[in-house]
Length: 196
Length: 81
Image 1: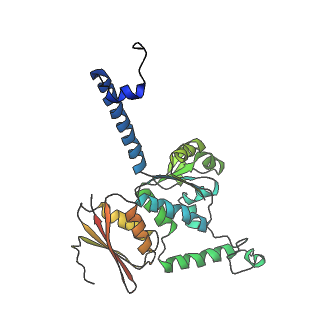
Image 2: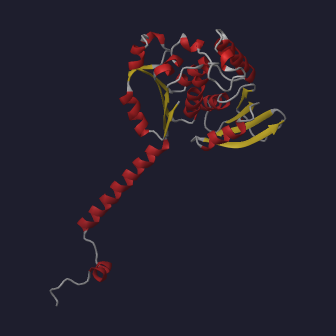
C-alpha cells in the first residue's frame, strides 16, 4: 500500500513546489500576462474598411462622411474605391459627379421626364444648392479632410487601367497600385466593413 | 453665456453640419495641450449626440458639459491626455 500513489487531490493541497517548478510557473504567468496585454493593445485602435463602388453625387457622401468621422475617432480607416467609386478620387471627375434623375424614386419628377437631356444636371444643381444652404461640406472638402486626417483612400489598380485613368488624375495622397487582396487583408483585420 | 470652465479655445462651427463639427473638434483638440478645455459652438442639433458619441469613443478627451442655448449647441471638451 505504501508504494501506491496517494490520491492526488489530498496530496496536491499540501505539496510545496520546488524552485524550478515555481520559476516555470512564474514564467508562464508572465507569458500569459504579456499576451493578454498584446490583445488589449490590439483592441484600442478600431479598424474600418469601406468599399466604395458608386460614383454618383449622392453615393460619394456616405463613405467620405463615415471615413472622415471614423478618423476623428482615431480609427485606422481604409476606403477602397473601385469601379464608379474611383471617380470620387479623380480630381477632375469628382467635381462633376451627377445625381441621377432617372430611376431615382426620390426625385419629384416621373422617369419619362427625368430622362430628358439636362435633367441630371438640373437635379445635381438643386442638390448642390441644398447642400450649400444646409452647411454640408462639399465632396472636395471631405476628400481633403479625409486625406488630412489620415484616411487611406485607395484607388483600385485594375479599375484605373479599365477606365484608362492615369495615377496623376487622382488627388495627392490617394494610394494607387492596390487590389482586392490588399482590401481583403484590411477587411479581415477590421472591426467594421461596409460596402457602399 | 457664462461658463464655469477655464476655456482655452473656442471653436466656431456654426452653420456647419455633420461630420464637420466632429472632424473640426478632433483637429482642434489635437492642437491643444493636456488639461485644455475646448468650447465648441455649433448650430447642428445632431452635434449633441455626435459629440457625446465621439467623446465616449475617443481616448484622452472628456466631455464636461453640453448646453443648449436657443439655436446654439455648446460643448465643453477637456483634453485629458
